[in-house]
Length: 340
Ligand code: GLA
View 1 (cartoon, rainbow, N blue to C red):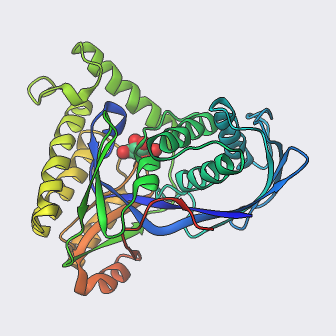
View 2: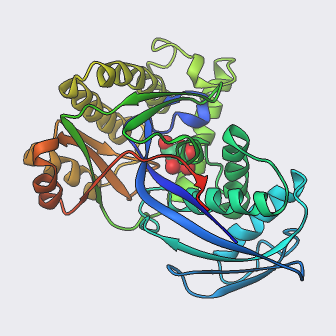
């Protein structure tokens, strides 16, 4: 019997940059998925989760049909088993029981937390050493396989590499991670705007538009584009300006300059709204509400089209401001691991 845990994440700044080899600044949060796993002798995987209905009964090598498996969340289990099989996991069966404190479908990476916790546990009982970047990349591959969405690697990297009390500068080209301590004067608040709409198709469309813009410039990724090169293309312009904001924000965080971080977050939201076109009226209103209540800055976080906003607020007023926005306070947490 073993227990693995993996946290959700919130992204402080740097959205729609990861799949263009750029930078982002997420932190793992104190909301997590836990999975308790006990091996079985019959080569089957039986999984159940407290948060979602149904039970999965699957082949341990991931050979079940991804498109038709029921309940729907079992497709993520199949995807993880299949990716791990390709990495050489021996198809050992197990019982898996999940619990989660990450709100589902709100843009706090409940699915990345689920995949990473399961990937860790299933690899361990299947005699496959898998950690760090390989673990994150396996989780990303499983997410893409299960959802059909060409997501980047930010969510899984944050879940694996989280450091308590720190945000993480991710270089999505080299997969280097540099933690920055969160200033003690500031706290992070998250508020949910409601369900996401069209997120999957719109996400894929934005990613395709970025790839086309990079190709027109003869580049492999917009990370390498200059502001001049993309001045007339709002989609590419967002990616280029956002990368610059991430690096500036990392410096401001390390300097403890919470006002500067807040200003950069607001500029990021404006760019995601006006140039990249992934905000919604509900997200805009929540950003407003946080700022009015006293946040240094706030922005939509993650893919957009609904989901959450993140605000940086004075620590002493965190609960009050969170309540005013109908949200909650999150703390930077350690990354995934086997806990027993
Ligand atoms: C989702 C994806 C990430 C990233 C964000 C936008 O969370 O899973 O890879 O692209 O959207 O920054």
